[in-house]
Length: 171
Image (cartoon, rainbow, N blue to C red; front, side):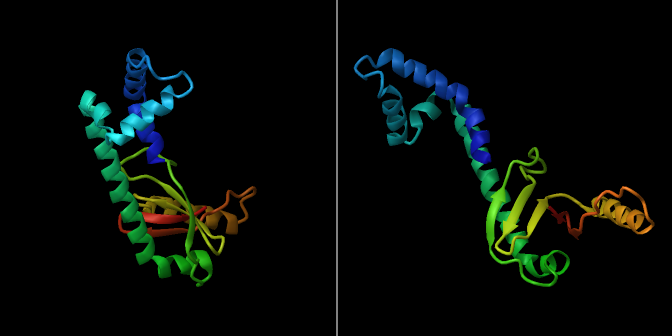
């Protein structure tokens, strides 16, 4: 999802650079102008675009660094919590390898962190939330209690695994 964010950040600058390219490159054929423009930017490491728009270069670097850091943090936490995840969500069985990740489920917050939806080989789907989940756990415990007391219709209580400053929630 960070590529979509990067696209939104760069679209106006890229459009302006392409418009200038089209206006100045009279030799390129109409059907190849865009391809020639992209190849030219890539051959020069995007330097023509970043040179013309240094704030774009900075924002691109910030987004890339944030993505690397927060994705690494997610993967480290997932690996460290595999046994803890298996107990409430997998019936004590390891969920297997991670096979799909859905990003962009929330705004960026706390240093660029985001909510991720994860799917494992076993079919288990979890939501990773990079914030304190104690209140969310308490709410779901209240829902579970209300269900046991016969509340009809009862909203589904989700299982929540609270970790220090983050946690995992049943999908």
